[in-house]
Image 1: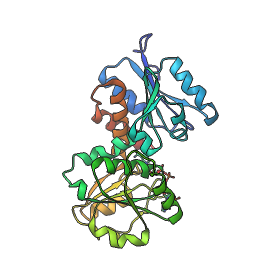
Image 2: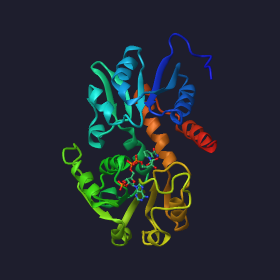
Image 3: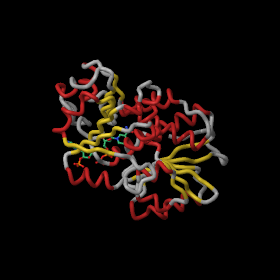
Length: 291
Ligand code: NAP
């Protein structure tokens, strides 16, 4: 779609990934740029893994102001950066880059996006138990977010003790130095009655397998009624997990909010302006509604 307002002074932001055509960020970020009245555009760039270094250098040369990074480049791009924030180093992956005098700088706004809806809660995070289902890439951002919130009682639940051990070891040199405890599904019964925040970072319940939940209604009934159920999945919304949690009367947070907030955090880094969150959320929800 042509943007009649673009001209020689327009600034360019974007997102690199492979594949990239299903990314929801271009409509969301372009709606935000329009609302802020910024003369700029946010463009998707399909970058194959073998072309990553030349693409990064090329985006620098042509004056791109900053860009998001998605699968499969979030880890590999780190070696191309002049600086990486402590959060980016801790997660071991970055999703947002911007220009500095030294070169590209990078951070991970999934962490900011994850904690944004939790920061407004008045829960006593230092004493709150967090249980994270899954030990993949998104779980890393969730752990970093929970440390940032001040949580000290963090449990990671997986289905392989070897992978859980690797997950814990991978944090050894991290600047955040989290103290993590791990368990299997069979440990949940003992953990849930004292859990304040239960986060699903597995793809269980994601489109098209809609009627499954990573946790049963009976397990959910063991949570305190003040607990928060948080699902990183953004399609469908709500997931079966969040529907069961709502039936239990728990506060629920879905992955759409995290997606909006990680994009808003990137936009704020790039423009130093307050992101139009409502417009971004509305645009994203409209895109998801079309799927
Ligand atoms: P990932 O690196 O592949 O990790 C997935 C994790 O889920 C792994 O620990 C895996 O266990 C576990 N898992 C997979 N299938 C399972 C099953 N059937 N039962 C139990 N555990 C299972 O994926 P990711 O990048 O972390 O993404 C995970 C989810 O988060 C996706 O749904 C993604 O869309 C969502 N996400 C959302 C946002 C957002 O902004 N809302 C951001 C990032 C990710 P094993 O290690 O044992 O295989």
